Image 1 (cartoon, rainbow, N blue to C red):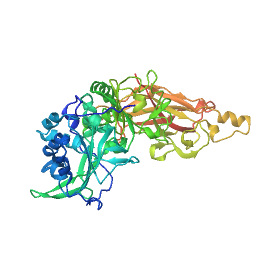
Image 2: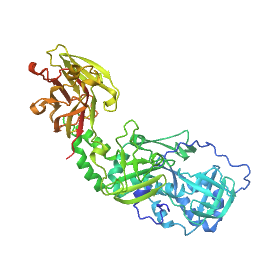
Image 3: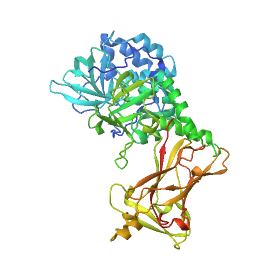
Length: 542
């Protein structure tokens, strides 16, 4: 498959495509770059380029493009650099193989000149000496950190017509065409005018700094150190979490919602993050809405077993296999079934979509589970003693449950659990009950009658309204009971809508109280001792 190349001479993209920050690179660079002792020519690379009539256009671009260091322009041109004692290999395109006038026009502005430097000049120059022979087969890291294959007399997809021209500071190869510049996924998304809302969120977490140790200084100009090869340390908290889309040695796929798709999904997701009374509620809502929108857009190609069967996003966790897995991605309704366009980049593919292709429950509106045997979740208890017990069997969540034992034979015990990370949406609020037999094995018929009695209880839900005031909901105003023969999920509040979001907050505003409610005349029909497996909130999406 041919790469989707972003050639300056053919592209109709705006100049903004070219104005991308320099890529980070972890390679260790020689700080001196001494010339090879076998090179004996007295002519520099610049002298050699000057002597070639068919390189006059390339020469003019070199003279008019200045070195940028940490995005600041210097007075040093690339003609000066190639005339210095620093060593390079240059693949110089012949006249007529690129649009000279277009590049010179870009060089009249600072942003345009920076783009020419990165996507054209540095795309044709590498550190160190690379001579070629018919047996040559190696990857070359160019000055813009892009990687090209040097194989025989071919560099990338361009033919070397006049190889191995020796100079005092390197080697010159004359090539018969412009070497295409390929963006990586991060550059591609950030340069596309149809994905500006996505790229703005990504770039908001970008922080760059100059790696002075790895960068190469050429001297001091106007009191400032000038770097011939400036290496930026790029730090992006989102990319660290979701995937290194700006690394050339990575391989990713990214689903990129267009601005219309982004806005539509944002409106759908935002109501679930209503922090209301919390400090900086609007900022929290905006961040978590965008985070939910982007969280499953990125896929590491090295981690996919069979892309036609399923895709796992970079958020996948083997300890939580039920989430971040998307089956049959190419079939109708699959996440890649309505791709607007696919763009091949230097480190993978961008799949643009006009509709965010996920359901809310696939991405962020997940069930909330509170393990009853987790002592940290128990806020209070009355008329009871609590035993944290373990159990074997697939039906018991996390292999544990809470044994709520009445203090006396006539006590109706109660226990209250805190419920973290609820969103401002609808849930079916459930209590998962384990049968008495999970702990006691009946020996006689009378024992089994005792064991197989259900629990009878009331449930009370506490939550915060838009003003932050605590509210109480007596679930159904009735009592509930379980099937005593199985692990039974009892819904105590169907499609209950929490008005506010409590996601990732230190102060938990949601809790559920469970209280045995067995009358004295009902003791032969119900058990006051309760075995509680977990509290389980099931998302209820309209």
